[in-house]
Image (cartoon, rainbow, N blue to C red; front, top):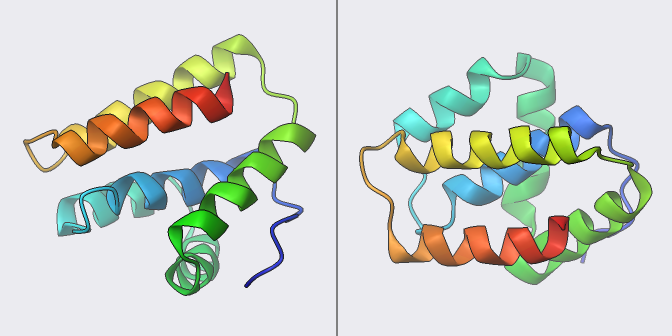
Amino acid sequence: MSNPSKNWSKHELKVYLLLLCAQADAEQTPEEINLIKQKTDNATFASLYKEFKKDDEDTSFKKVEASISVLEFSQMELSDLKKEFYELFRSDKKVTAAEQYLNKILDNILY
C-alpha cells in the first residue's frame, strides 16, 4: 500500500480527486481524461496518474482523507471543487449511479 499521508498541494489533491471521479464508473473516458489534463500541467498529471493507477479504492480514500485533514479548504474552494466533479461526471454526456454514489462519499469526506 502506498503512503496515505501524502503532502499534496490543493491543486494536486484536486487532480487526484478528479482521477478518482473519472474512475467511478470503472471507465475513464477520453473526454474525462482530456478534461483533467486541461486543468493541470503534463508533469503533474503524469505523476498523479501513475500514483493513482497503483492505488486501490481504499488507499485512494485514505489518501484523500489524510490530505483533506491537513489542507485547509474554504467553503468556496469546496464548492468550486464540487462543481468540477459535476463537470467531469457530465463530460461523457451521462452521469451513472456509480458516479452519483462516489459524489455522496466525497461529500462526506470533504464536508
